[in-house]
Amino acid sequence: KQEVTQIPAALSVPEGENLVLNCSFTDSAIYNLQWFRQDPGKGLTSLLLIQSSQREQTSGRLNASLDKSSGRSTLYIAASQPGDSATYLCAQNHNDMRFGAGTRLTVKP
Amino acid sequence: EAQVTQNPRYLITVTGKKLTVTCSQNMNHEYMSWYRQDPGLGLRQIYYSMNVEVTDKGDVPEGYKVSRKEKRNFPLILESPSPNQTSLYFCASSLSIDPYSGGGEQFFGPGTRLTVL
Image 1 (cartoon, helix red, strand yellow):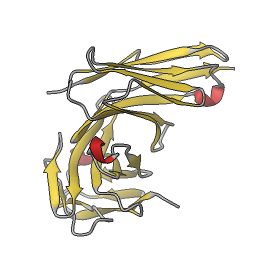
Image 2: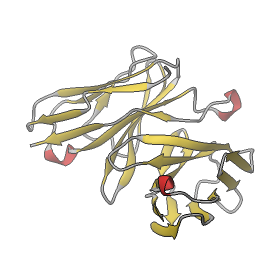
Image 3: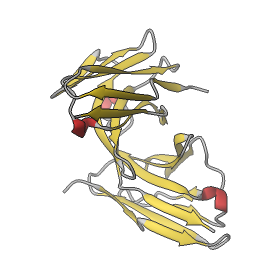
Image 4: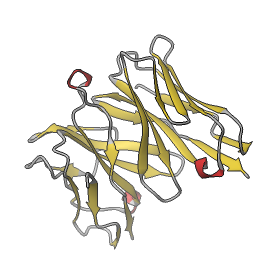
C-alpha cells in the first residue's frame, strides 16, 4: 500500500518566519503531487500542483518542490502571516489519490 | 463561477435509511472522486470515476455506491447507512487524472457533514 507521510504533525511559529513543511511518499510512479490548505471545518483549497516531470512550482509566498527519486516534497512558506494558520495537506495522484495526515500550522502575531 | 457543489451540506439520519449525497461540477471535468475525512484517519478515497460510466473503488468503498451517468454529476449512495459512516464527505473533480493531457489538479466541494444515529 502506497503511503504519504507529513512531518511535523503540528508547527507553531512567530509571524514573519520562513518555514518548511515536509511530505514523503512511497509511490515512485506518481502522476503529480498536490498541496492543499484546509481551514477548520472547511473544504480543501488547492495551493500548488507539481507534475511528475517538474521540480518545483511557485505561487506568491509559496514554493513547492518535488524529488521523485527520494519520494519527497516540501512546501516552503516565506514571511509567514497569522492568516496562514491552517492545516496543510499533501496528496499523491496515481489514478487514485492518497493524502498525508497534514501539518497543523499556527502563526502567532 | 467554476465550482464543485455538494448537497446537502449537513445531514442527520438514522441507521438503515437510504440516502444520496449529490455532487456536481460545472467545469466539464472527466475525473470525479469521493472522500471521507475522519479525525485521526485523515482523508480517504471512497470511489473515483475516470469518465462517464467508469468507476473504481478507492481505499474504503464498503457500504457505498456511486454512479456516473453524466459527466457533471457523481452521486454518493448509502443504501443502508450505519453509525460508522458518520463523517465529513468531500467530492472533488479534475480535468483528468492523466498528466499527459494536462490534468491532475483536483478541486474540492465544500463538504457534507453526515451523522448517522
